[in-house]
Image (tube, rainbow over all chains, first blue to last red):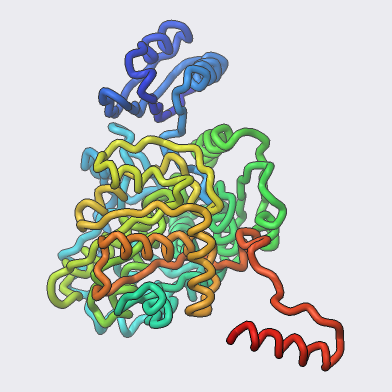
Length: 80
Length: 415
């Protein structure tokens, strides 16, 4: 089963939303949170997602549509 | 001498052997090279360094390479110049320019990190190097790969301007233009780095690659006569450079190579249109809020910098501060440096010059204190930043009398 490592960054307006729950439930993904820092007005989660390729892509697209910033675990892979 | 302990997670401290890996498998934190300082203390001296070549490799004991230097033999040891004209312009006593706009072979400080990464790639037996870049890093990887007879893959967003592509293509890498948004290209490159057994310099080789930046800091200290300045103003993109200059100073101090206490304050310089690290510093928070870059300082345009948190910590630990500068101020910074010192830097240099002015004017830096301004890239690569800003002063017909009149006119205006 394909796996990806991502860093999700949540803006203030999404902090109260059950984003991770929806990701698991609606896209049938297995998630494993490795590190996170969630405060009242901002938060990020470093996690591993496992699922079939289509589900991973749909899940990532859904996250972006909701306004979550989705980066690879390295973040700045493209360097000027 | 066995000088490396291996790699160590910057977050949880877990140790790993010195392999081409970059992320802690447990907490996904970044890995960093861990040295045996006790052993190094017995061999690294001012004399041993001074006996080395006039390049960054004079500090090879403190860099993570263990075999022969594979590429970039002439990288680094760039001029540190006393910038008296600029000091007068800024109204201060002691200003130095660390000038990596003339770093060999590709005219930016990226040659330092790439020379280490490519040398390390050879050491590990890789035959292919890669990176994703829109500018200086691409130039440098392609150049060093050519020198080392390694295959290279350079990934770029497909909409990158032709001018920037040529300075990479000339070295004959395989250039892959990816059609998609910045985020899509960024993620794809992460997946490619994960899948193929290549030395992706700033991904799986990042722990080694980033260590190359320390040489910039070592040189500042050595060239100042084994002392540290009171202020260093560093441009921040991914945030690594400022942390590595600080690491270099701390290593020299720990090895007993610096006289007296270190009082250096590290200052972060960013464009107002892409300044998430300086925003952290100003708001005094360790939370980095990503931004969408919107600035002419393209070589600093990283909206979600991986080392942003560590850059913030460096600034806090050293008692430094930060400055955001507007695009107009960046151009003015470039013009001031060229006009006063004859150095044509890219926009990132305009950022540090303008930030220095701001830090002085706001009283963060006292006018009597010693200042080193980091200049990390060459202006000839990005002349478009000055497009429309400069023009000929005199337009004449091809006759001596026409020139005589124009000269008289110029002189009368000067009076």
